[in-house]
Amino acid sequence: MRVLIKGGRVIDPSQEIDQTANILIEDGKVKSFPKDIKKLEKESDIQVIDARGNIVAPGLIDLHVHLREPGFEHKETIRTGCEAAAAGGFTSVVCMPNTNPVNDNASVTEYILLKARTEGIVNVFPVGAITKGEKGEILAEIGEMWEAGCVGISDDGWPVMNSKLMRHAMEYVKAYGIPVISHAEDLNLSAHGVMNEGFTSTILGLRGIPNASEEVMVSRDITLAELTGAHLHIAHVSTAGAVRLIRDAKKRGVNVTAEATPHHFSLTDKVVLSYDTNAKVNPPIRGEKDVEAIKEGLKDGTIDVIATDHAPHSEDEKKVEFDLAPFGISGLETGLPLSLQLVKDGVLTLPELVKKLTVNPAKIIGIDRGTLKTGAIADVVIFDPDKSVKVDREKFRSKGKNTPFHGWELSGCVLHTIVGGKVVFSG
Image (cartoon, rainbow, N blue to C red; front, side, top):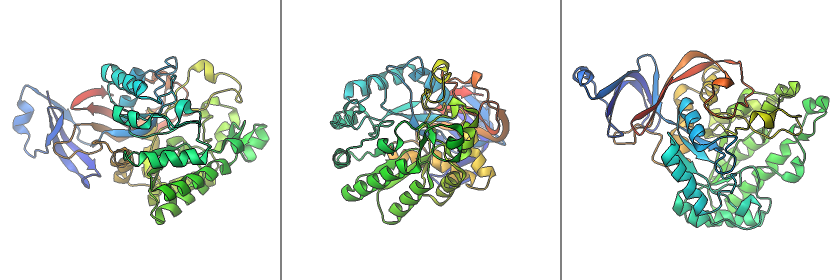
């Protein structure tokens, strides 16, 4: 099957392309950029997609997703998570290891990849655990997981508190050229906290999580990366201090990259005033100064990537007291429109935004995606950046309806998502 995408505004930061063009897809790959398409349009074996007035970009890549399978299929499965990704314009997702059993060995990695091949409609790239069971005690079978297909290691959700063990993990992964992804949190400082520590937590009577709990660990992990030369990737940056530490480290030449989530640059901790458990995340949504610092970090390149930290939960799990609810937002289906607000606000240009959602995450995990170069695998998203959409969680493909953005009017609608030359979503 061939696909002809005609007349769209093609934005491909990997080639510094931003121009109106046609794209011909053949055998699952980008075949060419034909200028004269009159004959092609009339051929019977070709699917023509009229993209005039819309954006055509490499398929989006989400570096931080929880697919919940195996073990938590009541929250999400690989199938439903992939469907949610496609609806959000993501053609590749990187899934964290906090499943049950934890992805800390090659067998679990292979199971995830088998399920993704047989039931998923987008590309799935697993991250393996740093330590066995994410317990922070013994290194996991990192080499075997890498051979099985893991693109990074992380104990996401459970930071490695043992600095010596974290150093050993960094030294170990250098042989494989994959990043150590840090969930930066000092568990002693954040213990029993459920939201950002500040004025709002005080008036609500909720225990807070101080900025320092993140910044202490960002500082430690940067120090270890500087010592070992390993590639450190800081997940879901939420504080101004963390942005400053990463910026300073990059200036010194430390091999560090970072990501921010749409909820951390779209909301302040005042969203918790209604005790909405859908706004309970870890790290917590912070104050206005932190939000502005994240935007500045995105603007000046300190923060390389936008990732959703898609963390679906069942409705029953979230319909409890704020203290008892689990952390997490279902983010795949709101990630693009929330990110497009950065363009409307003048924080990023549209090509800069596309870069943080395509070629930058591809480089961090070393995959051959995030580009529309001739011969590349044809992962493509076509979206209308101006079309208004109203967030309706009941229409989510994800099992997780836990979003604080329900009812919001946003701009940015995914029209088509193409994976390996096949249209897997049309809105």
